[in-house]
Length: 323
Image 1 (spheres, rainbow, N blue to C red):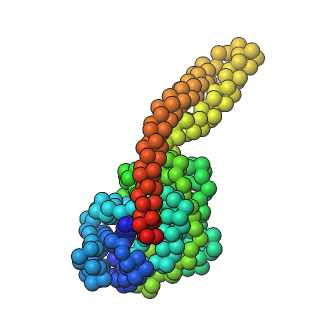
Image 2 (image 1 turned 135 degrees about the vertical axis):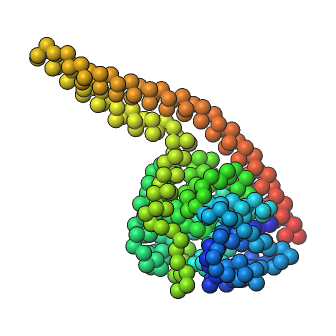
Image 3 (image 1 turned 180 degrees about the vertical axis):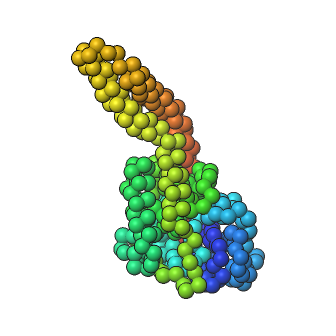
């Protein structure tokens, strides 16, 4: 089984070498790709010292953002299972190996390192805004994706080749984790969140995530994908707001006319306008749902076919290993 490890790194000179060595020790046969994302320190030099020049890759992504870095790494590695981790040494390699074993044994599509359930993230993270933001975004994205997630912003993820092949990464920055969760839900794939240990950052390492700015970007990205993947739901929300307003305004026009004889032209116009908005929302939402449902069925069918091939490859490898 071929394992590819992707480590996006931005100004992680103090931790990147130890991260690479740790993962290479736990995954001796894996191919590692460190993606230097416009670091202004010696991250690239430190990573080069720890990488095997014959098998591993040191890549450079000039577009700033974790999403771009992950996309670059995925474009260069050919593997059966992909490990994505951060370069700040906060995710132990032993935990990544445990997640990989769980994915392969259960033939899951993605296993995610859950930092929240056992309190590891709250204990190690000193920024209260991060804790609150993670909980809020996890709740909102779980609602939009109609799945129950515990830690949607985890940077430790193990993914199967079939899931990676379905990726068309459009996020540029920290929206990447959200995109992976939303796409997995869209494909009805099998995601398992596993509680893990989570280390504190070193003194020379800081979180690159801005609580407010990146939180807004992540939420906006999730909403856009919600509209794209489940169009009837947002249009239903619009209709649910517009139609009652139209009915109330219409009732006011009728009762006012009966009482005074005045036509209440402005109110009548508003009632008709909001009613039209509500009706059109239902029409467009239903139409888009029919079209997207057909496309979703085709996407899931392609995904399942890729999974059959992947499972057959792993089964063959397991038999050879036993012999």
